Image (cartoon, rainbow, N blue to C red; front, side, top):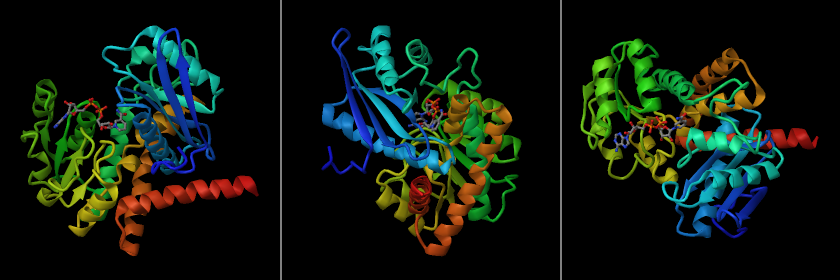
Length: 351
Ligand code: NAD
């Protein structure tokens, strides 16, 4: 592991096995300087243990950066369960995973990710308290999507200010790719602010809901990134900013909720900057969800969670200004600020 390209000084990686259920999983803890490591559990049919480890190393580091940029008292971690979520999941297997999380005694707090449902999280919560990000009796919080969308909306306003010269979204044309939980809510906030919407979605019902209730134009799913718009908001898939799509983007700003939008960050972040397109780093603009999760862990009020989420706009403004001053792509600046925040906290702890 120490020689793997994605190993980044991770504090610990714990491997788990449960003979009775066949459960195989691991928890990667990247960094706990800022607080307990927090990040979702992903269940995926990995090609093998190396692939699972690579994913966990990469994603747990991403959570350290995301939590640092959202200014949260949380470190970065991620759990993966090796297996096909459609065929190999059972309550007993979920409990085995919950016991694995519990054995780390709060050093890692889990939440939902690909392959996991609210029902799974409830099953897990029967055997560990170190779980958040879904509705739990006696605890604040629940589905993080609405807060993610509110943060994305605030972030779009900040990106419009830096990239279009105004944060008044009246008459600003926004192309939204994916109008599911987060995309629809983001589009709703945009509409209320006077934006003119174009939407695309592979899901017919979601597409119709957005077109009808938000008076949005509809674009083909393979053309939405190239729509005649001021802002392109990817709210569906990862790796949407790539060799094929970037040359076709007409918008001057890319700001949306989807995770891992840059296919290859070093290449495609620079390509966007080279075209003069302002990119809002995905893990910063979509931080509202993890802020909501953190609020559940620490029992924060709705007002406090909302106020912290609204600070995403100021954080992005700081990133945009530094990127402009230093002539660097925005994703690089965000990574550097995140690393700086963690390093500063480490120095303070050591002092
Ligand atoms: P979702 O599944 O509710 O919505 C995604 C939507 O995208 C669906 O309507 C789906 O049909 C559509 N879609 C899928 N493929 C598409 C394609 N090729 N073209 C157009 N539309 C397509 O998921 P969500 O919770 O709204 O999350 C959206 C994105 O935001 C994901 O990348 C997710 O990782 C990220 N994100 C979500 C949260 C959260 O709180 N839910 C937090 C942070 C990041």
